[in-house]
Length: 181
Image (cartoon, rainbow, N blue to C red):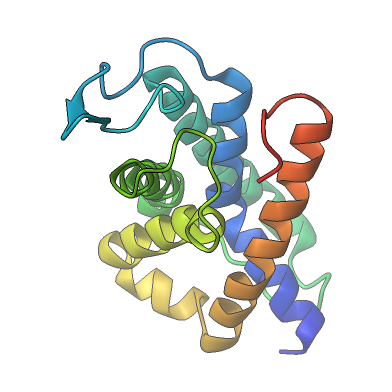
């Protein structure tokens, strides 16, 4: 596979994990997941992690995976590579894992003394990717190994931080986020 094909497969495959956090920011609101609970005088997660945002993120990612399955026959081969379809378990695991990864990062940020919205370079850009990939590898190992070749994984790990920073800057400029990271 050439670089363009690897880029296309990496982006296509990660879309259901990329979209949930954006949808959560757009929908958000409502009661926080942690219910305001603290641990050692620090919030468990913070007000930014809500049940509504999490549910909306998962629904958006899963819906996108289903839509991509419909579009796949029309676009397959257009970039010189076979675009994967998403198995039923993967339709759920990529967005759920992405949201769990983001929630886990929030927990780690609170433990390290960072306030809501504070930057945590590296973690902020890859938390949802690690969560989505880990859960998918767990529930659909065959699909995972077939889809996420070494080249695709490498592109995901390089491409994601660039996309993350770019989309966050756009969301900040549009006043959808209160900080640009």
